[in-house]
Amino acid sequence: MNKNNSYVIWGCGYSGKGIANILTDLGYHVACFIDIDEDKNGKLYNDIPTVTPDCFAELECGECTIIIGVESLKDETDILAFIQQINNRGQECIKNLLRYTEIKNCLCMECTDFYREKRIYRWEIDFDESLRNWVGNIDSEIDYWKGVCYNHGPAHDEYVSRIKNESFSGMYKNTVDIEDRLSKGDIVVDLGCGLTSMYGKLAKNGEIKLISMDPLAAYYNKLNKVFSAKENVSIDKCRYGLFEFLDCFLPDNYADCIIINNALDHCIDPFRAICKCLKVLKVGAVLHMRHRQSEAVYEGWIGLHRWNIDYENDDLVIWNKENAINVSDEIRSFAKTVVTSPADDINAGNKYITVDIIKTCDIEENIKEYSKEKAELALLSELLLEKDAELRLNGSM
Image 1 (cartoon, rainbow, N blue to C red):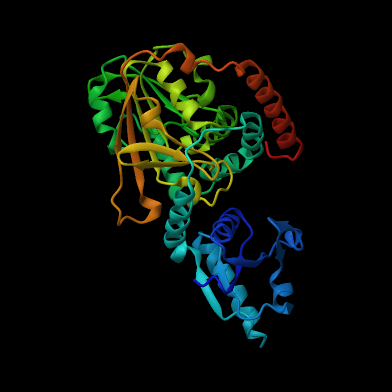
Image 2 (tube, rainbow, N blue to C red):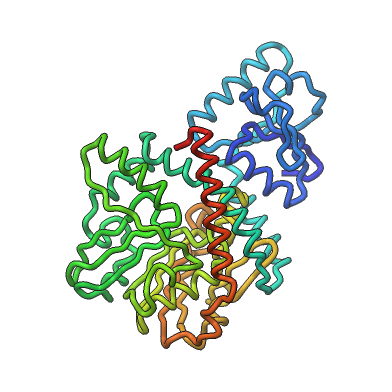
């Protein structure tokens, strides 16, 4: 790709917007989006206009390159058919084509390196503003899980497998070492579980108490209820709980293990979330986390994907465009961090970091207390009610 060229993204949806964010961050020129949705015609996303295919054919775009900005094979096939129709009219305005699925890996690595070089270690989060952004983007997460629940495909098949799974490591073999630590009756919290936990209650050393917990539990329980009635299956209820306020939902020194699987990047304040998890864990217990490396970059900073889970010199590092923190350094006095990093030659989409944080002693009071929590929880309840009203009035629920 050449920064002297202009690029047009076909598809102004979730993936297309993510592509635009990465390209503009890196200094590439995005001339416009193309989308068949007439309602998007003329609208701007980050000052980039959207046009219909017919309108684009009439534009003077010169030698631009079109990036097919979708990841669905069906959508890509439909776009290629539209392009063929336009060119068959004799306009021949679309010559240079790139598939985002072919260039995503290189772009993600380039963008990650770009921001790593600019990274400044500071942790100055405007919690109220970040909270508003989080609530404002939860509908994208709900829409994703609605698709998983109702649309047939690999993600739906995994959802059905989760429902049927009874074995602790039956679906996720990377937790075998965690399973070895568990005893009969141990309490395991699957935090940020999504629709339903992928972990079963039957562990090698006996049945555990599994708590599935998610900030969007109310939405997921409603989706599960509809699906379970339709398919005549039983789905355990998901409990409501917030990462940054976990100790308001669970007692101190309560859990034997907390698992976060590709969900910490959604947090308002991921470092605070880790500290709250450690407060809820017993001394000697483990917080087990597995995340795609630099998930926010990989998803183009779209939706709830706001943070990158990363590593540096075997330390856990969390960062975004504005903030960065070496978590291992910050918690060293009361927890031990073990980071398992991916091989360098793995595709960006398959690069996962596994982190085990073992609580070594109780956390000092001044570290675990946050003086504004009552006001923050009050604001959160107000914003969630507003979002609930918006979704109901728009017919999304």
